[in-house]
Amino acid sequence: MKLITAITVLFMLLPPNPFDSKWAGAYYYDLNFYWCTSHSSCVHEIGHYLDDMGGMVSQSEGFIEATKELVEVFPGEESNPYTNKTMELYAHIYEIADGNPLRLPSSLSQFYDWDLGKIYIDKLTYDH
Image (tube, rainbow, N blue to C red; front, side):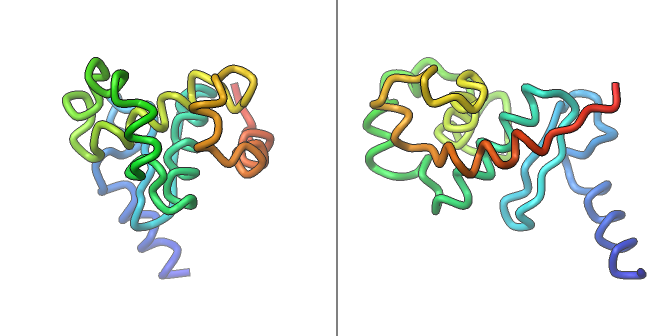
């Protein structure tokens, strides 16, 4: 019980945290944990999870090459000091697709584990 309480307190202290109103969600790569406040932010954080579980696909040569023109105009680093531009772009593209591979061209959809993502999207529940 003390371990669970300590872990909960740790999550609340880590930036960004659920009490910081400027954030709609966060994925902690080292802890393999995310929190979110809306469907779109949950899908975005699931995108970070897929990136992590896939071995940092966002840092692969293939993803970087496929998105090189998008990276130039995407404000990832400026808007989030906790990740880099291609990590944010990877999650943002997944968020735009809303977990649906048919919403992306195959040149981008190949970089996502759609089946794993669907498992987590299907588990989303909403209290409001």
